[in-house]
Amino acid sequence: MAKKAVCVISGGMDSTLCAKIAQNDGFEVIGVHYNYLQRTEKKELEAFRNVIDALDIRTKYEIDLPFFADIGASALTDTSIDVPVSGLGEGVPVTYVPFRNGIFLSIAASIAEKESAEAIYIGVVEEDSSGYPDCRDEYIKQMQRTINLGTKDETKIEIRTPLVHLSKKDIVLKALELKVPLEFTWSCYKSEDKACGVCDSCRLRLRGFERAGVKDPINYA
Image 1 (spheres, rainbow, N blue to C red):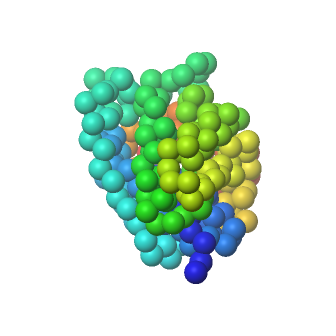
Image 2 (image 1 turned 90 degrees about the horizontal axis):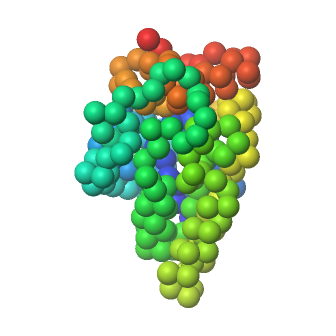
């Protein structure tokens, strides 16, 4: 039987590249996507479905987590908080969703145990990101330890973060090298029609393409 890996796939560039890397590592990929009433929920779900079709991923989970909107405290889930468009600042931005990756990884671990998967891939980026605390390498290592303590003795799950120390430029170049379907991916925090080009996520993505010397294939306002 093929070895399996659960991949958390938002529909963005980073997570899509992660899924492709998992396939290249010899894993049968199980795609997991979360709908949490984020501003671009519909577009991200569309991107996820296009990505898994393009990568021929046969098994998928689409998990609804509406409680994130009840918690709020993030510009992604609370429409009373504006998504910043003034550039990449210092500190943790208001687009941070409290402990989102911890919850995502916990659910992915549950699926991995059920599916007898030996790895979870997640596209966190520490060095060239928005500064989210749940994207740090040390945090992910601690989550792996916690997950293995809280599952069956025979369950051994490795959390793999192949992008964690890469720059956005490196991510773009790696995605092009592996022929990742970047045209289907979506990164914008604000818009579901054309990417706004001015939110943190768009700025990071555009900077990566600019430094890589190639044009982003998606449309911007």
